[in-house]
Length: 162
Image (cartoon, rainbow, N blue to C red; front, side, top):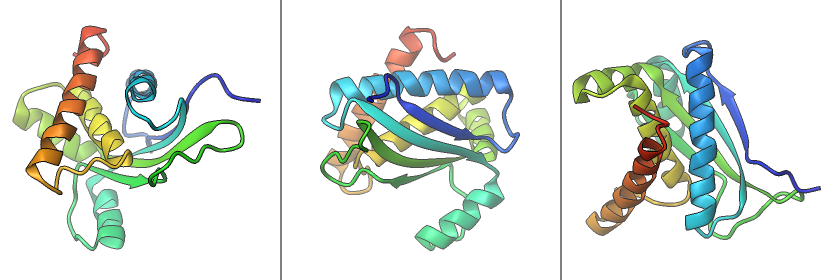
């Protein structure tokens, strides 16, 4: 039987308020709907998201990317090339790991809300899961940024993020 909705697994380790998590999950559902409509990646997706501390993301970054520093978001894709849905029709996208501490610092530096920054990082990570890579070339960066901007604009227009 095919599920009627995306599957989003959230692990916040107590770093975010329940209401914040609910809004982020709702926004991720809209993001996945947008991706289903605009990308050739599938119709229904499974996504795992963990909100962690700087130290936790630093350890993961060191172990998997050999970079001994904290970062804002890490993406580990299960979507390699052609869509490979599970028997129930859900396409596994992968795992996003977001440092809440870094998101808070960046939101203060940039001058927008913490929630906006968390959404921005999730959108950025989603496009990495789909294979976009801003570090490949200026053209790829421009394309990825355009996709991210379109999705963030949609969320803003729908009143989903401040």
